Every structure is written in C-alpha cells, then in structure tokens.
Image (tube, rainbow, N blue to C red):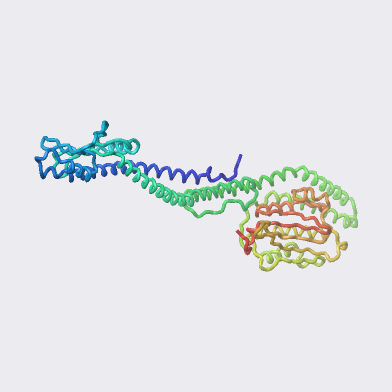
Length: 483
C-alpha cells in the first residue's frame, strides 16, 4: 500500500479549489444568462426609443403619407434602422431608404412580451446565429400606448455588443471566482485540510514505528471535531504504545520461562545439597559452608526479582520536560555508586549549558544502567586495570546540512565486551556478560532511548566499552538549528 503524501493534483487541496471554482462559475453562469438577456432587451428598447424620437415628425405633420427620400434617410440614420413602420389610428406608414431591398428573412422581437425564458433564448440565439440576420423590433410609443412602432435593424451590431459584454462578464467572473476560491481555500485549508494532513502524516509515521513515543500525536486545544480527532488519536496511540510494550515484555518473559525454571532448579538443588551437608557437619564446617549457602540463595532471589521487575515495568510514554544534563549526570553517578568510588574515577564532561527536553526519570534510568555496567566491569577486573575511570561526555552532531542529532557517551577503560556478547547485547535475558547477570539493563536502556525517538548503540574501540545514546536534535532546547 502506498502511504506517501499524495501530489497536489491528487490531494484534497486540488479537489477543494477545483470544486470551489466550478461552483462559483456555475453560479456566475446562472447570473450571466438573465444579465445578457437584460442587456439585449435594453439594446432593443434603446432602438425603439430612438425610432420613437425619429418618427415624432409624423405626429407633427400627420397628413404626410410619403416622406421625401432625403428626410426618410435622415430619420432612419438617426434611429440606426433599415426601415420603420408606424401604426396609429388604424393606419400604417412605412419609412425606408429609397434604394433599400427588404430582406427575405426577418426575426421578430416583440418587446411587449417580457417572458424571462424567451428573453434568454433570444439572447443566446443572437450570440450564436445573429451574424447575418435582421431583427424586426416591435414595441409601443412611450407617450402613446395605442401606437405601434416596428423597427428593422441588422442584428450584427447587437451581436458584437453582446460578445463584448459577455467577454467583460467572463473576465470579471474569473477574477471573482479566483479571489473567492482563494479566500475560501485558504480558510478551509487552514481549518480542515492542514489538520487532516497532520493526522495522516502522524498515522503513517506512527504505523512505521509504533515503539517511538515521540511520534505520538501532540495534544490539541481545539474544541471542535478536529480537536476531538486529535485527542482520540493521541489516546489510541498512547494505549497502543503501552500495549505493544507490555506484549513485548510478556513475550520476553515467555521465552525466558524455560531458562528461569532451569536456572532456579539448579540453584535450589545446590542450596538443598549444601543444606544437607550443613545439617550433618559440626559448627566449624557450618561456618565454612554458610557463605556459599547465602550466596546461592542470593543469586536465586536476585534472578527471580529482576524477572518480576521487568514484567511489571511501567511502559508509559516519556513525560518530556527541560532537564539540565550535567546536573542529571552528577545525580546519576551518585545513584550508580561511582561518584565517590574509592577505586574508580568518575568524569562528567557534559557542558553546564546543555538542556534537553527529555523524561528525567527515564533518562536517569538509562544512564544508571550504563554507568553501573561499566562500574561492574571495572570492579570485576580489580587491580588488573590501573587508573580505572568512567566518563560521560556530550556531542552536538546537528548542523544546517544534516540531522544527526546529539549523542551522550558513556565510556570506560575496562576490558570491553567479548565478541560473543555483541550478538545478543540488547536482548532481554540474553545480553548479560557477567556470571549470574540477567541481561535486562541494556535492554531496558535501549527501549527507553527508542521511546525518546533515539537509539542506543555500542561503539567498538581498542580499549574499554563505549555506549552512545543518540537523540534527535529536537531534544536539544538551546540548538540554533532546532526546528
């Protein structure tokens, strides 16, 4: 399934703006049709008015039936007509040019009939078929309702005028449609499309890596349906994150059941044998065997307790807040027992001005596990390691050209890790390199690092062990390259 962000021409934005433009243009067409019909009616009525003024001479001299050719031509030219017919008091009088030839086909336009549909049809016919037609405009004289006037005019000037009017309407309609659609689009895109895209991208990213708690939808303060969608998606992702962590822990526990049973059985068998021997021996032997008994019991209890703690581990997402990294490292060193260690020197090289947006408890747990592992490795070799030391350092690897983020390094100068330990280093119950170790510390540290959107890595070097907590640059509060 293709979950990439759709192109503009396939996305909701393009469909939205296209729909808005089409709807506005349809509305403009509905407005244009009666508008162009009114324009045509006004043009025809103007011809009738001009003709009424021109033939007013016949009312002044009613006995003149045949006008001189020169006077008739001037009257027709002033009215812009080919010919005119004046009907009054039961009489009809034709005024035409002396050498005009009456057209064979004449289209009648009776302005006494004001049917809206008929006006619209007449306007459309004139636009598309009026190039070589003659109109017979019929109307009444304005001051004499019983007098009828008919004017014959060429329809071509009307057609040209309507085309000009239509062109202006089209240009104005496009401008209005584009401006209106742009305003509506910006509003709808901001209120609906943009939040929907955020939800979509969040779902895609969270689906690819549901164990990354930094990808959980951010809280929304909106009170409408979009805000409800944000909050419900956030709640669902929180529940899914916790559920996946619990399932992972249960799966790890299930895989470890066989090993737990086997190791506990062996340990308890040893305790049983030692107990039987203690029961048969005198006090000096009891004093000799008692420490071994206590040690075996201690290992069994510690092993079982570690497994139970891992199964009940809190899998809540990190609660991010500003944390002074240098101060946190000092506190962690105290908790890990290396701050004033008699044989191990602890070095905190983190600058004082570094503040991270992390969960302080979870970050402290990561560092405690790593520092404690280094301390145990150094204590195991004892005097074989001179000047034993553990160092915590910091490095900002982000810049304008890359997004490598930041790194917190925990290093020691101990014996390092054997090659066999690297295969299952971060796997629960498999990654321990100490005798009697459970192998949960590094697994938990890696899990918490991933919940912060980062990762935990082991960096091989010639001497000692080096672990790096890599976090995204968004975790660095005082970075000039921060998004």
